[in-house]
Image (cartoon, rainbow, N blue to C red; front, side, top):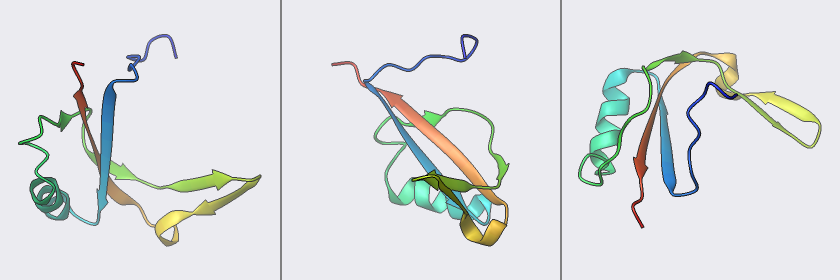
Length: 77
């Protein structure tokens, strides 16, 4: 964890998950993220998602891999 960039509590993250890059792009623009100074955190790629909580886990999206893109902006104040 020491090698990972540490974010501060002023950073804000939004992850968009979709079946295609076109869907993610459309949602990025629909939410006005560019106008709100959000930029991509890391490369975009296929992921499988698992939700955990209360000692149980659940494969999301029926276990299918989805494309995920995470965007961030740093709040100055």
